Structure formats: C-alpha cells, structure tokens
Image 1 (cartoon, rainbow, N blue to C red):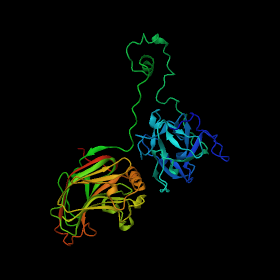
Image 2 (cartoon, rainbow, N blue to C red):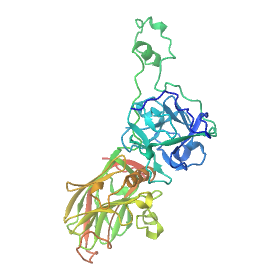
Image 3 (cartoon, helix red, strand yellow):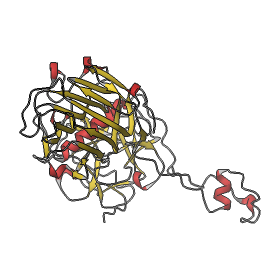
Image 4 (cartoon, helix red, strand yellow):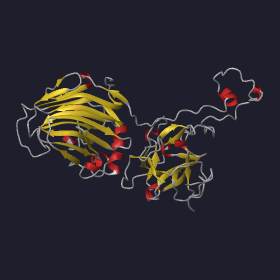
Amino acid sequence: MLTILANIFFVALDAANVSDSWYKTLTPSDNNYLCIDAPGGYAYNGNPLWLWTCNGMASQIWVFDNQQVRYGADENYCVDAGDMGNGQQLYLWECNGYPQQSWELDGFHPSRVYLADTGTCLDYYTSWDTDGQPLHVWDCNGYDSQYWSLWDSDAPWPPSPSPPSPSPAGGCSDCDCSWTHGGSDCGVDDGSHCWSCCCSGGPSPHPSPPSPSPGGAAYCPSDDDFQVDYGSPQFNGDGWTITGGARVSSRASFNLLGGYVEFDMDVSGANPGVNQNLYVVAPDGENCGIECYCDSQCPSGKCCMELDFIETNGNCAWATTWHTQVDGGAVCDAGGCQYEGGAGSQFHVHVDFSYDGWMTVNVNGQSVDAGSLSPVPSGQDASAIVNIAQSRGFVLESAQWMGWVPGSCDGHDMDSSRFSISNVQVRGSVVKGPQPRGC
C-alpha cells in the first residue's frame, strides 16, 4: 500500500522545475506533449476527462491539495473516478470528499498518482499517443503507463473561484453546539446542517456521484424514431421489414456504455449472396440520413467508426465485426475484427457494452466477446469506443445490400430478398437527436 503525507504533493520535480506553484499541469512521464484536459474547458458534473496536446489553456490546469485534484479553472470541481474499476474514465464532479475523489502521490518525479488507500493508479494507454484518449484508472502495476510528471503553471485566466472548504463533504467546525447543552436539549430535527452535527453525530453523507457513462434509460423506439435513408422499408411498430435494397436509421444517437441493444431478426425470406444487417455508426453531427451517412469504408469520403452487431448472408452464415481504427482504435481496421457464425433463419441478438468499451454480442445464446474475434481488439480499440460513445454517440442502421457477405453461399437476387427486425430495445442515453419512445 502506498502511503504519503497529505502535503507531499508539493515536492521538487527536478532542478529546473521547482514545485512552488499552486497550479499544475500533468503529463505522462514518457510523453510530455499530452496533458490532462477538461474537454471544452467546461466545469460541470460528468464532464469526461481526456489527454490532449498541451496548450497552456485553463482546461489543462489543476490543483493538488488536501488529497484532491481540483480543476484549476473552477476549484469547486474535482477529478472523480466513479466506481474506481479498471478502465473507469475519470470526470469532473463537485468536490464531495468521497473515496473516488481522494488522490495521493508517491512523492517522486516521475510520480504515481493513485486513489488513497487503494491499489488503483492513474493510467494511460502508451500505444495511444494522440489527442482524445480517455483518462482512466487501472490496478497499480509499476508499468511506465502509470508514471506522471507535474509541472508548474500560471494561474488560469480568468482567475479561479476561491478554493472550497478542506472538508467538502460537509464538516461541523462551523456549528456552535452550546445550545444543545451537551445534546440533551436538541428538540425536533429541523433539517438543518448544524442540528445534524450537534444532535446526531454529524451530517449524513452525500450520495456517491454516478458514473457519467449511463447504464441509461430503456427505449422501445417507435416508427417515428427511425427514418428512411433509401428504398421502401415497411415499419411495424417495433421494427421494420426490408424487401430489396433499402436502409433505415435511428434519428437519435446513443451512448451505449453500460447498456445494450436487443432485437429479433428473421431472415427466412432472405436470399443468399445478399447482406442483411443491423449495426451502428458514429457520424459527427445529428443524424440527417443518407446525406451525412458515414462508416468504416468511408463512402464519399465520410469515415467513422462502425460496429456490426450482425450481418447475414441469407440463411447461410452470419458475422459480427468491430471497425474502430478509423476513430482512434489500433487493431480493427476497415477489414475488421470479426467472428463468423453458421447458418440460421431466426436470430435473437443482445449486444452488451461495458463501461470501459468492450462489446459482447449474444446471438441465440452464443456469446461472442472480444476474445472471440480475429484479430483480437486491443484496449485502445475499447477506449476508442468509450470516446466515441460519449462524444458522438452511435446511430442504429439496418440495411439490405449486395457486396461483401459472410460465408460462401452465392446468389444475386436482391429484389425478392426480404428480412425483418422486430422487438427493438435500447438501453443507453441520447447524445444527439430526439428522445425515442420509452419502454
């Protein structure tokens, strides 16, 4: 277990950088070009933190004090580690004194930054050395990815608000309890802070803040929650039927971290050699249909992450595929990280997303996780999913087209090929677009 004195944050970093400033920037020890950054410079509960090219702006200035890492531009907000699990992305939250906001250093340069009284360290993916990597924690392991350098900084402009009380969870030092005569004269609880301090042993703790990545609400989208990109699909209240070439897409984009997508797929009327599917893509803006469509193959030069939940070749075969490299992933390129399954005409599909970006597809009870794919995705691919889910969200897409298909069954008749999607459910939060119908 790592232990230090409360004020050890202010140690000398090196001969050229005497640690005598209240304000700091923080960089990986082996990459001093990337700084911990609050996207947009905004201070609000849940703003997810990342690494970004050092630029001297207020969004990259921090205060290490009282076992807190406070945002220099507004010291009412602290770096928060949510559930403190491996891969948990850090975010800003109002300072509250809870364990997920209690940080220490080991006192050396470079330093490990870790959650107090735990074996959980601030961590970054060394193979991801570009803007946008989600800042996260991981079990302390002594690797270079867990060593950080602190650098003195000027005060952010405009100046920060005054620092919060050293007891942000709500201390009792401001209460004069003499009126209680030792607790014998409390009377009825008036709901005040000082009554709690003087008469019940202290204030009730504030609830722990939730993760900014929602398990989310449950949505059962209606016909109006989808739009026709091309062709003539037929909507049926909880899904659609496509005959010939066509595509539908959701009007909303979703953060699916901690959530899922579930649906039934009937390809009994589909022809071989034709691709039937349901997948997600991540356009930059709100979904406007065919005009702003993007995927991993970069149609009309529009490139974005694509996650294929299921693609079928009539009744012949099915596949699930990650395409993450286009938006910061390392392994899953346009060819994808893929698993191929066997024949079938009816599929129940349930797609889970962990909070740290790992997608698991369950098809008729068969679970396909990242380890089942070829090639196997890396942690950088999962982190790319986290970044895109939070910043853009994912749009649901479903189409029938001719081109690549899984398996080896041939055919050329798309006009009479038909498949259906039904019982669509989504658990997540809406990033862009209108709120769909709830369940």
